Image (cartoon, rainbow, N blue to C red; front, side, top):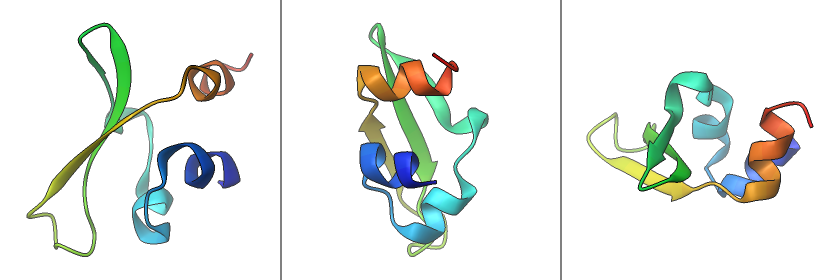
Length: 60
């Protein structure tokens, strides 16, 4: 959970909902794309994923 908060800067409620369906590859780079809790799903944010976080997600 701390890695999610550290690398994505998502709000706590959004980080809690974060999972594999929220990862997207955008122009050869990984990004988190999630509808924000505070906006009741009306706003979607896209956050680039740091390469080190990608390695941690992959178990490396």
